[in-house]
Each structure stands twice: as structure tokens, then as C-alpha cells.
Length: 206
Image (tube, rainbow, N blue to C red):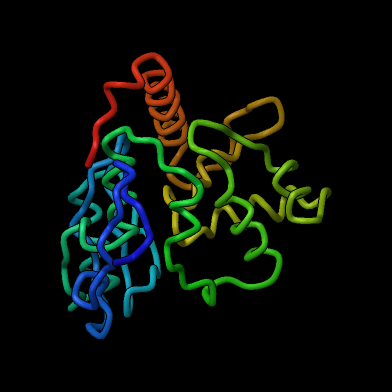
């Protein structure tokens, strides 16, 4: 049995080849409804290739059919990335340790962009950072524009939280899904974090 723990703190059974999609080629999770739109995790051999996120479930289904024809559809609970989307959808805090544990196809990104996205994965739920701060974390403090470009090309939105990157002074700028989407997710995280602080005994266990 794996030492990995689920949200209740109990050991989670090690994922089987069928649960992760290992050996089954390309698969995608059924859409998960988010505070803004819907998302699906796309995996190949159990490794996260992308998170497709659109403003509506109908639009997401169309994108998935167009980009990944023939991909096997699986339940979100059958893979780690899907479980994180479900947890996020339910207003549960997704810890950075869980994000780090997701098998991601880092070969999709290179150089400074990869460094930036790995630093992005460390931004906690309910918090924000700025483009300049993220550039400094990545070792190039004056490369805020390059960070913005990396955010715009993030293959794994929501799980790698580019919506938590804001302009100087907290200004809402530069988001591919639109500023309303960024505001919606940040407000949702803020409410969820406040609820956890106020009512720690009422958290949902899954």
C-alpha cells in the first residue's frame, strides 16, 4: 500500500495501471465544473499532458473532441490530477504538496519557462504573488514580462495556478480566460480559506 495519504489523512491505495491510464495511451477526465467554467485533465500513460479549461462545459467538450479525438474518457477520481480538480471544485484547499505529487509532462516546457512554472506550483491556495516576485523566485528579477508570457502558455491551468499571479499592487492584469475568471477563482479561494478558518470541524472529507 502506498504511503500517500488522502484528504482525510488516511493512507491511499496505490493507483493501479487502469486507474492512472498507464498502458492505455491517451485519456481525459470527464469535465469537472469549477467556480468559472469547467476543466478536464488530459493524460498519456498516466502523466498529465494538459488541463483543458473553458468557460462552459459545452465549449470544453468541443475543445476536447477537437484536440484529443479518440481519447478514453475516465472518471476524474481515477487519477491524481482529476482528484485535485474535484477537490478544488468542492472548495477544498489543495496543498502545494499535492500539486507537487502530480506526474506532469515537464518535457512540454523548457528553459526559463519551466523554472517559472515550477515556482508557480509553490504558490499556496488562497494566496497571490506578482509577476515580478515570481520572476525573482525564478532567478531573473527583471523578467516580469517573460513570466507573463510563461503564464499565458501554461499547459496546466488551475492545477498550476497562474490565476494567482497578479500585477504590482494586486492589480488584475493579463489572464487568458479573462479578468472575470481570475477574480472568480481568487474570490472562491478566499471564501473557502475563510470558511476553513472559521469552521475547521465542518470540512468535507472525500
